[in-house]
Every structure is written in structure tokens, then in C-alpha cells.
Length: 320
Image (tube, rainbow, N blue to C red; front, side):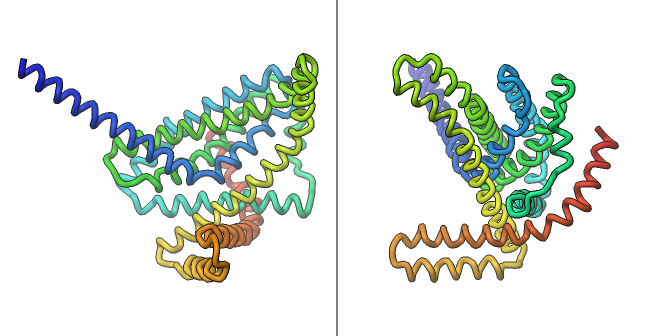
């Protein structure tokens, strides 16, 4: 009996350790996941455009296809590659983060440039030609998954960089959990957004009370406002996060001057404010990181549009 009790005590101890490990993984995944807010908002804001021109009945199936592609990008391609880099070439993580940060700055600055100087985009106009719905759906899904790959690479790299040091399996589990959670959050939110107007129309036609019908009308009228707000917030978040990543990477690589000046100025402004110093300091840093992000992004626009994009299309056409 004493042997059985000892065995049960050992099993209970192992269970406690396992539970603590699972809890640590979940905690680390949540903490790391909060660092990718800007990319997540952008991902959520970008995806609905791929559903333009389709029947309402095809919206959720298309989102599901993109979701599966996103999970494949994160779990099958990016997760093992990033873990191998982290194990054998950790010095590459910071440059990769900076490359992703530069991409965010470019994307955010390009959106601002389009708002300030509206102009035609031949690629978008060609894409709006519906043609064969089945072929268009396949093309749109492939395009969305390609875009998701870039955003997912940035998301997974940021998450990995914010996981506290641990064993290989701890890092792998945390990265997988955080990546899965972000994917569910993004595409669950997208599904809710694209069906919101349908829910509103249904409430207007079927709600038994004036309050319900009024809520339906509010949903239908509010969707354009929501999408516009989401686009603005997503752009601001991209510029802030992208600028922050670049500046932090420069600090890590031994070029701290801009990073230090921004933080010194933020501390001085916060001390002068006298109240809510932590929030004021964060606000100043975020604003200046965003200013740096849009300045860098504007400089990258001609480089990316005239050199990188044509080169990428040639490589993509050669291998895909």
C-alpha cells in the first residue's frame, strides 16, 4: 500500500509540474501575443477586401480557406524555420524583425500616400474584373494566403522574440499556441465583420421588437464606419509597431542614438506633465516611433514599388 501511495504521490507531482508547464506556456503565449497588436489589426483590416464581389454564401467558405492557409503558413513553414534559426542562428532574429518592421512601415506609409494623393491602381482594377467566379475565388484565396505569409512571418518572429528563454519544446509550444490563437482571433473577427451587415439585414426584417430592428439598421449603417476606423487604426498601428521594431533593432545592433533620444525626450515630457507619467511616456514614444515609421516608409515606397515588387513577381512567376 505504501508503494502505491508513493506512486500516486509521484503521479500527482508530475501532474502538477505538467499543469504548471501548460500554464507557463499559456501565460507566455498571451504575453508574447500582445506584442503583435499592430500586425493583427492590419491583418484583420486587409482580409475583407478579398471578399469583394462574391455572393454572401461564399464569404465564410473563403474565410475558412484563408484560415487553413494561414495555419499552414504558421505551423508547417514558419514555426520550424524560426525555431531552427533561434537554436542555431539567433543573431538572425533581430535582422528578420527589422526586415518585417520595414515592411510594416512601407505598408503603412503607402496607405497614407494613397489617402493624401489618390490615384488609380491597375492591379486592383484588374482584380475587380469578376470573370469566372470559381477562378476568381481561387485567385483571391491564393493572393490572401501570400499576403498572410508575410504578415504571419512578422507575427511569429515578434512572438518568438518575446518568449522568455526556455527549453526547445517550451518555445515550440508557446509559439504554436500563440500563433494558433492569433489566427483564430484574426479570422474569427474577419468572419464576424463581413457577416455583420447580413446580421443587420436579418434583424431589420425579422426582429420582433423595434429595438431589435433599430439595432439591425445600426449594424448596416455602422459597417462602413467600422471598416474605415479599422483601416485608420491598423495603419497607425503598423507605423508605430514598424518604427518601434526598427529602432529597437538598431539599438540592439549598436546604433542606439535615435532610440535613446526618443526615450530621453519621452521621460522629459512625462516628468513635465507631472501626472500619468507612465502613460504620457508611452504615448510620446509611440508617437515618435510612428513618425519615424512613416518617414522610413515614405523613403521605401519608390524602392519597393520600382525594384522589390517587380523582382518578387519575376521570382514568383518562375517558381509558382
